[in-house]
Amino acid sequence: MDDRFDRRELLLHLGDMLEALSCLTKTGRPDAPVAQLAKEQDSLQDFGYLQALAPQMTMAEFGTRVASALFLWPKELLETELNRNVLASTIQHDLFDGNPAGWKAYVANMQTKVSWFGTGLPEMKPGTSEEPVPAGADDASPVDASVEAAPLTEWDAADEKKGWPWPQPGSTS
Image (cartoon, rainbow, N blue to C red; front, side, top):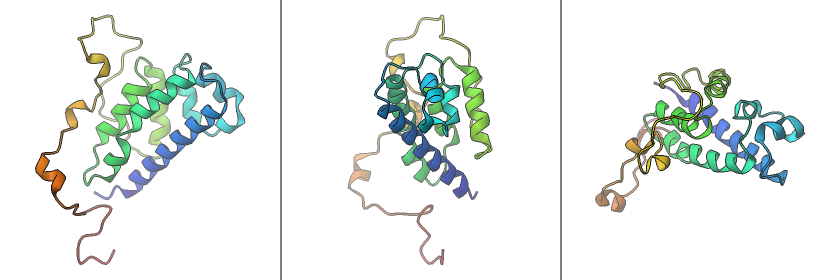
């Protein structure tokens, strides 16, 4: 499957998220709600997805959540096989937990560029769960199960670049 254009769009979105975070940081208002700042600041007008965030999410909280949601994206976007669920579920879990309406708006926006984004994920429930949370569950993320430690023998191996984005030996592309 040739998904290089989807990868490009997701990489551009990663850059947009970092740019939005930078613009928010420059406001010097870490306790202000992001949605409010997005309405007030001209520098944030191009980031429509900020309006989909929970109304009470502060700029400081947004920064923490963006870092948590996107730290795996560069690695995932360079993998030979694109893990679509990891890319979307980290955003869903870290930026839209308890905000299904915001998640749906965000997905609709993303699907204008990447048609499969957010498909196949379980339905979100509004608000926080009433059930007791197991110890350590606050630190869990939807990608914990998919992240594996590399065996020590792989750490010493030469970095051989195969497949996307590196051309196969003998190819002309």
